Image 1: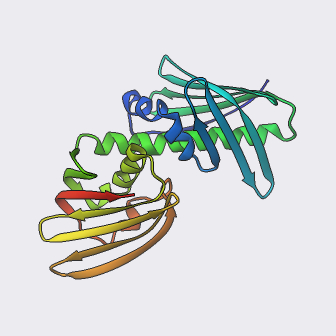
Image 2: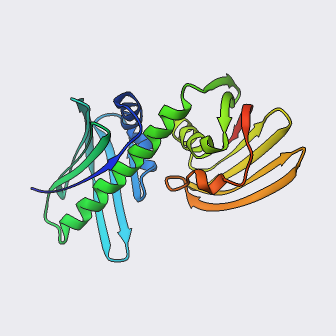
Length: 232
């Protein structure tokens, strides 16, 4: 069996990681490559990695297990066995992909899988930890969120994307004297419109939701409490 592992720092705890890792239907659709989970456990699973010099496909059935701050996805299919695990070790997240498959250049493909799983769980876990205690659903697709700053915007988008499960949505925010609208299409943040007493501005972003950061919204001045509405 061949294996590859990737580690990266994470600003979250195991509770946040488990919140993300225990939702495989949403997690797999949030990976930086094609992946899908459907049905009930054992789930049906499909993974397609299509890059210029790196192509990989796998389909089969999957079980999910949790133990000792580790989430493990065990996948069996016609091509063989594929296992992906994500662990929290101190302030690091360690993602490992192992496989017993007849496949060329398998090591590079396993590294890409491990990196994709680790990055997705890291980003969404950090956003959950930052936003979950600030936001409250009020019904009919609306939320109340408090103590929001411009730096919270990428985390707010990732939290809502993961909570609601949609890759395409519009987030509308109404505050005390200002409002904003952010468009996300196919997991890519397109732009943000912001209006206040000082004027209006449109910021083009055009970056995948996993990659957006505070710097992408640095020209905006958001702060305080907002009523949010999500349009899918």
